[in-house]
Each structure stands twice: as structure tokens, then as C-alpha cells.
Amino acid sequence: MPVPSAISAPALVAESRAIVAPLAGALTLVVPFMVGSLLVARDDDRGLQNIGSTVMLAGFAVAPWVSHALAGRWGRGLAFGGAALAASAATWIVMAARDPYDPQLGNRKRLPFGFLISTSFFLGAGGVADSFIVGPEQRQP
Image 1 (cartoon, one colour):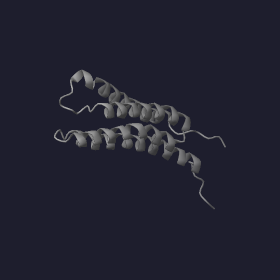
Image 2 (image 1 turned 90 degrees about the horizontal axis):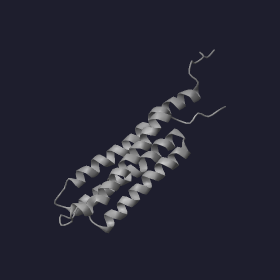
Image 3 (image 1 turned 120 degrees about the vertical axis):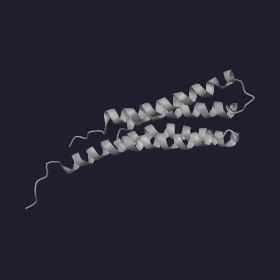
């Protein structure tokens, strides 16, 4: 006779998703940020700096989608991921229009880039933080 389990299989899956989803989102945010920061630190190569910013922006845009998708919260993923994606796209457009790493560029002309990349980071991090707070979707049997 099988031994009854205190935790059912669906509850165990939901609990594991509650742990894995936010961690996957956090890694998706942090790893590209670290790699991109290393590339941006190469102040002798503006091409690498722009690639580094693009890597960071990709992580910021994708992280909320990853954390909410794994948790099964597609609506929240759409809201938080859409906002982070829009901010990342706007940052990339501003970056493409005016190279923020150009040493001849004045600080005032770099403000839109700085504001938008910070906004992109905080929206991405906010989406991941939301997946930590809310957890996976609870399905009714």
C-alpha cells in the first residue's frame, strides 16, 4: 500500500515554480547586467560599450517575461514585461540616435539615455520583484 503524502503533486509543482520562476527572472536580469557592465567598462572601444548597453537592455526587457511566464502569470508578465520592453526599446532608439559614449558629447545630451536605461532597469527589476511577491498562479481543480 502506498504511503500517503502530506504534499500533493500539484502543490509540490506550484511550490517549486514559486521558487524557480523569480530566481530565473533575477538571473535573467543580473547576468546580462554584469556582462554588459564589463563591456561598458571598456572605455577605449565605443562599439563594445554600445554592445554592452544592448546586452543590459535585453536582460532588463526579458527578465519580467521569464519570471512571470514560469510562474504561469501571463497577464502580469504582459504588463510588467511590456513596460520594461518599451523602456528598453526607447533607450536603444535614443542610443542609436546619439552615441552616449561619445567623449565629445556633453552631459546634457546624455541625460535621455541615462534616464531611460535607469527606467528600463527599474521596470525590469520591478517585474521580477513582483514575481517574488505574487508567486505562481493557483489553479483550481
